[in-house]
Image 1 (tube, rainbow, N blue to C red):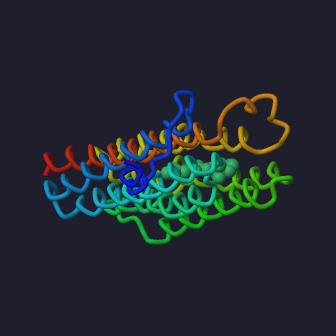
Image 2: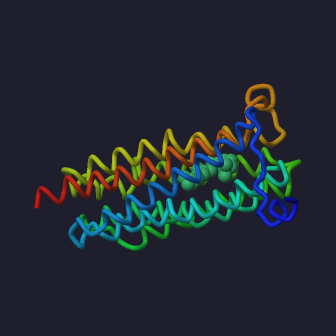
Length: 242
Ligand SMILES: *C/C=C(C)/C=C/C=C(C)/C=C/C1=C(C)CCCC1(C)C
């Protein structure tokens, strides 16, 4: 009997009160399901929207793979998988910036808009990583710099060039742009809460009791899958208009 068990791959147990492990597990499944949904529905749309749906699928697929590793890492070490987390973000957040560009292309969006958003997002994430993983003693300062880059993104899409383009496009594009703007303002604001929960600073008394990973996992599910569904909904609406 023993040989049977030793030849089976070991699967780590998930304790009933391990909320972090649970959200990694469910997050992984949700990202996989969302990817299948976006990829399989891609061909129902005009060429114009196909790329946008493809990018939605890529975002959830990249996340699914990282969640697979993060779930394992957590189960094996009981520590935050900070490295995998930020590798995931550095790939998926710029892709979300690409989504803004793709849907505004109908109104003549230029690549410079896309690069501006991508560079700001990279600054936001690299400084966040430095504060969370490298210079934890100075987490407040790095978090502040990251927050400034975040607000620059919010400003650009709510009031800057991206907003003008959305207004020129009007109709379904304008309403999808507005919804995505809300995702960035409210949905993305979940992340600094996770950061404050997991790093030392003046905010310890406020967010210290929360789990950084649970907060990040909730943020990812809302933002990655929700963002993709907004784009999907735009493609459905615009497809039936034309
Ligand atoms: C799919 C992943 C997404 C949408 C991740 C977004 C991450 C952020 C908006 C992170 C922002 C941060 C700050 C604004 C300050 C503290 C450090 C960060 C990196 C957690």
